[in-house]
Length: 180
Image (cartoon, rainbow, N blue to C red):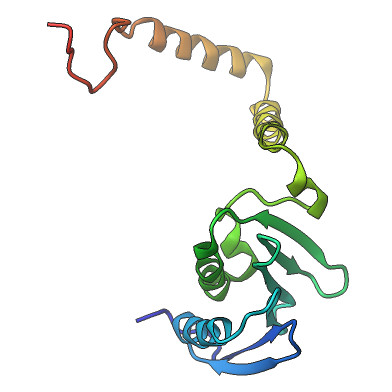
């Protein structure tokens, strides 16, 4: 059984670009998923929207373009876009949205703030993602404090790694040596 909404029930509005919309009041995410699944599968539309007006968030599924968008913040909306590589990713994204809203989709894939970024090559998108990790690491290093603390941490790490036995280049960890 799914965790019930607190406070519940919760209202969602499902809409499709063919002009149809459906308002539901549900007690838990599973019930919302079942209702949206029936709405989604019963149509052949280019765009489907799930709106959570009380939270000021929405999920937009665009199977015709291979894109999912998430939107939050009613007064100043913030949109992010995800390139979808398989058709079976749309309904799971809806379930994550029903469970935890906009934030529930954080780990669903690489989100971009500009729809045009999805047209970039995989290498360019990968470089952009790597830059976010590098930036996060640089911020965490700055927050370590004084250089003395950082230096002692580095010495401890070097000591730990230098006392670790080295591996043979012919075998990999956790794999048997097949050369005998």
